[in-house]
Amino acid sequence: MIELKAKNILVIWAAGFTFPNDISKFDFVENIDVVDIDPELKDIAEKYFLEEKLSNKIKFFPEPSRFFINNKINEKLFKKYDLILVDAYSWKSLPPQVLTKEFFENLEKIWNNIFLNIIIDRELNSIFAENLLTTLDNSFWEVYYKDVNIWILGFTNLIISNKNNKKYIKNKVNSWTIYTDNKNSIELDLYKLQIKRTKNKLL
Image 1 (cartoon, rainbow, N blue to C red):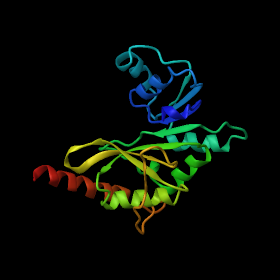
Image 2 (image 1 turned 90 degrees about the horizontal axis):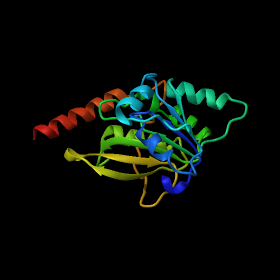
Image 3 (image 1 turned 60 degrees about the horizontal axis):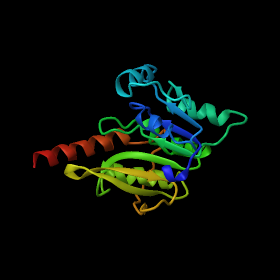
Image 4 (image 1 turned 45 degrees about the horizontal axis):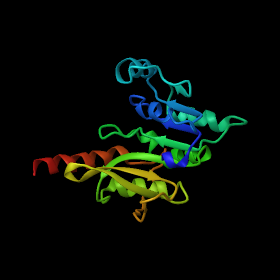
């Protein structure tokens, strides 16, 4: 992602502010908007994780990501982001509201390069993996992914993008189901995936 020399960046989900803090040190980065629902995260990160104040390049928006994106889209004039990283997905929490066709389509309205960090089954043969990649294919023009972290028991991190990047694989997974706001089985599909992971642990 650093090779893109992005100036205006959006990060959804702050975590410990480590990624925004690291990239703020690059001279070519001018602005980093960070969105997270917990208003206390910034102070906690500065005090306990980073042990330093965040760069003035970083602007923190303590609000739901979809609220932020909708407001951004409705602004009369706004500068599109050069890079968007959605890191709101952890193994125990994959919020359905950031996994639907409507969310991904809205991202494209403020995008240039979009990256999603997803924890998923490595073979991409679960119902969740098939439906998610199908949803992305129906939201973006093209979908590419890269396996960046081999986990035990068949699970891994995928970086999924709407652009063809070096060493990324073009998505060929397809199913009949698209996750939408008014019709999805995300939580059930994730539950089945967690059951599969539990069974693998016991084998």
